[in-house]
Image (cartoon, rainbow, N blue to C red; front, side, top):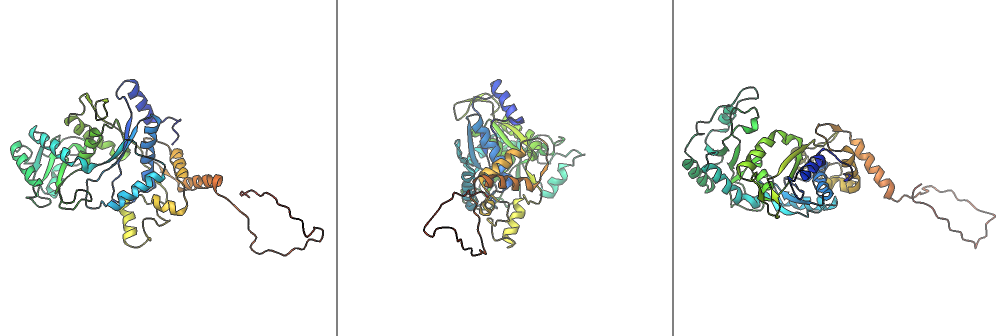
Length: 379
């Protein structure tokens, strides 16, 4: 991404700096370690790291490891390699969402005591029914107004492992009639008896992404949380969590800067023709033996593209040409191939070879004379 050329995100950041809303730009790249990174992740990666570079700021690498069912250390290690191969370094520090489990739990207890979170015992089917639809408001759960002391006791017993999976969840108490489905008392914690790749079996309740992610941003002193457009409808919930946790009040962040909490900004995700972008489907290709592995040259993973001969500079040129916008679109895969050809055309050595030579006898050239001619590696 060309840091000399502006875009709508940098226009917003320029305005925030001018108005004193932040002192030092601090972004983060937060992949989930549940597979190998593919070309689609590069847009978020480049956007966050280059934005921090443009403003002489900081960029964190934070693994959003809140779902232990499919997260593995193998994927964490591969992401380290991919990010370094792309030419970036996390000058803001390395973090894991699991580092904040205790703090997330403490804040959740505080929410319960303040009456803005409660333990719900509806089944998944009942919760879906009570949630309503896009055209009909939801209904309050019969457990919504239970005493906070009772919810707190149940929450602590959830952590102690006294209940089976699906028995109950912790929900935020917001507005079941909201036109935004994400604000209809979203789940904050669920019971899950799965071993975590970092914390082992220390926890049997795990925070949901929409609760843990804004808290991670706020705790790390992130100023601008840059994410794909699919999270635009989640922004009101993001802001609700940050506000209720107290991070909207002016405070000094962990880096010593005055802060009023992180600001989420969304941009269109990368969609490409003839390219599978879902890690779920890519995982199936690997597990069912359709490809030889995550690094199969036919895969859109960065490790696969690396085996295929793609270069980091070509991929970054591609991301720069695609640009940032607020509208989803589909980019032709041919543009990526053009960027690769263009990059290799400038750096790849070329030689000519005669595979079936014809013998020629020169009758007018001295036998002891040798002449050397320079030939460019770019025929």
